[in-house]
Image (tube, rainbow, N blue to C red):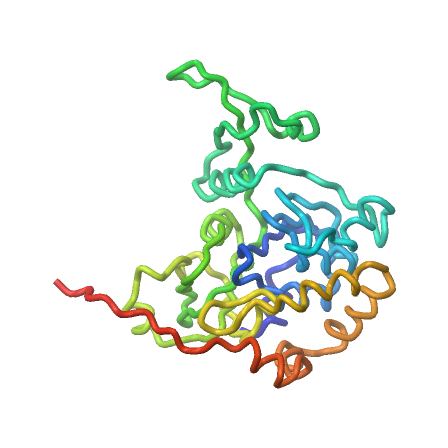
Length: 298
């Protein structure tokens, strides 16, 4: 289905939403459609809520952020997020913070259908003092005190991948995040891909299949759907966009103007890519660098 239908059917007001991807394969196209459809009161969860969640927060979609680090990578603050936290604009934003592995552990517990996950992360940390969900348990084997975090089971997870078949068997190569855990933990899963390929292509290289189709609710083909992040083998990270976002978002009216032009002002991702221009597309498009195949025979 197309992105408009996928978001309309599977992302609802009040949902806990995860859009994952660690630097790589971050689905901005899904976030932009959520903004266009004016979803409200979302709890946004993500290890690194960078520009994608800054945009969702500034558009008034979010009431809470569950995260482990927040910022514009290599640049500085997320100004839309800061205004929501510090000034309540466009609406107040509640925060729930973990370490990176703490949030990975929450999603891992959710994926495994466990109530919590034990870890050692928080010895000497101030986080348990500000996050009452970080608790402790005595190990039944060693009597050691371990930190625990509760399972996170999102209502919906959006995963961007390089390719999938029409059944949603999605393949990723390059840098991984916690896409698999976030997908298995969720009640509903939207897979967005650069291209949909025949099932034999997926079956020919099964080790790349990170998300199995039986947990997927919607498959969306959205070329360049991860821009300004990148999709290995398709296009590079648009570093100039990240640097430029600091000036765009520093004032509320500047960020609002950007949303009006680049989100509300375009009807589809194809229009967005056309608006980027041929020069940007040519600069970022990946050159061939083909991995050697392997023999799966026996």
